[in-house]
Length: 154
Image (spheres, rainbow, N blue to C red):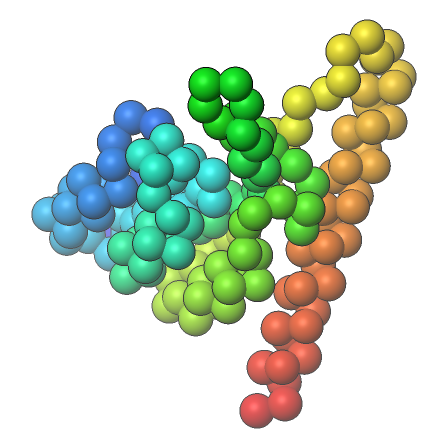
């Protein structure tokens, strides 16, 4: 049915199955309309590096959910939290450089998972979120423009 209607189904790496199992699943299905969605922070649940997960996903990559993150040392462990794109540990240029060469990539979705400050009223939260989204979107667009300009030179 997917082929009949030209519908694609993406399976996202999440906190429940390791990336290798997802790749094996899609490989066993053997349908070009079934692919993988790479979320740039969900791999952390399995202590995987983003470049390792992306490398596994590349042959079947159809979408990317892009967001940045920080890793902070805290008492008795580490805290992983979202941040504005470009202000964290994600090597976004490396990631984008790889995904732009995917044969089946349909979308790059900007996601925001940033903890808001406590004690803010609704208006403050909405204003803060708007600024965070605008800053992240501007950063992503500027990098995409850089890639577009470099492609046009060839």
